[in-house]
Image (tube, rainbow, N blue to C red; front, side):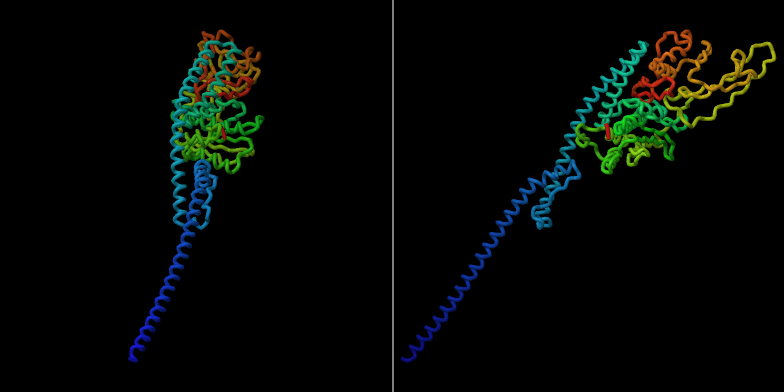
Length: 501
């Protein structure tokens, strides 16, 4: 009987212990559940914060970073902002956003190139039509110049032809920038003719002084004549535009080890370091040329030079300063683009500056004394001085031509003066009239001074048709002397042929 209470007490104690164990476990479970709920709340808070941060980054990407990245395609100096949160930079999210920017820039550049190519194709077609119309107008003006010899009308026609030549140059430069061919095929020409041909295409040609130090006969191969003329014209145009109107632009032609250099020095304001780097990058022709990179309105001179230097293997450098404080531009023509022409068979244009490297003239031989009664033999021919150059004239002392300076029958040197009238030449001994002589005659006609008309030869010795002939073609599309403001006594520097920094 006494065992039952003990058993009941033991069971009650066991139940109490079990209840305490279950109660403790329940408390632990509740605590764990509370911790988990707290963790879930923290994770939810973090998730909400990350979502808000991601939303802010995307908004920042769309509002600031993508426009800046698109603008950097055309303006390299622009900076693209980084992520809104600096800690995002090295995370997968930051790298993904950077990939988005790279993809946007690539697509913008591709679309820009396609749009620019379409614009260049349209401009090529337009400039082709403009060039054709200007060439037709040029031919019409030349026909009028050959038909009429009135001095005032000739002066007006020359002025119109020069204006037309400048318009033709601008159209030609635009076509070259858009990928068109130079438009003209030339024969081999003297390099000095190509340089002066480019000079004659400019409005300020009279401010350009050319010093020719090349060997006589230095010429360009046919496919390099027009590109050199275009490059020289654009470099001179830059020099004239960026220098004071009362200053000159000096051009020097020199031989170098690898070919020939054409050096152009101006007395302008010069360029800053950034402008110099940009100009050098354009003339080098290494980067693709887009119209949208050339400004508004587009400045196509240096871009056209870059096209031509890349196509014809020429070298242009504008990274140096000139001795006069401006810019020095150097065009180098390598030896494989050079040729040689016989200056006696095909001399340079009459208006081209004479070279300082003149060959030694052949010494004339004195005629043998005439002891018999037969006719006096004609003296040996003496090379005439180059046209357009005020040199000493050698006159023979043979019979029928002796004067005060040839009493002993030997040749005498006489200084040619500006006031001396030209010695008349017999019609049967006059050489055929050359185009260069006709160009020089037209230059004198433009001067229109009474002294030039009074010093002209006898009209009976002029050509039968009485119509002035056009000068020979040189490096440029026009072959006239547009410099009506120069006196005939000056050395002619006219050129055939005839934007910016």
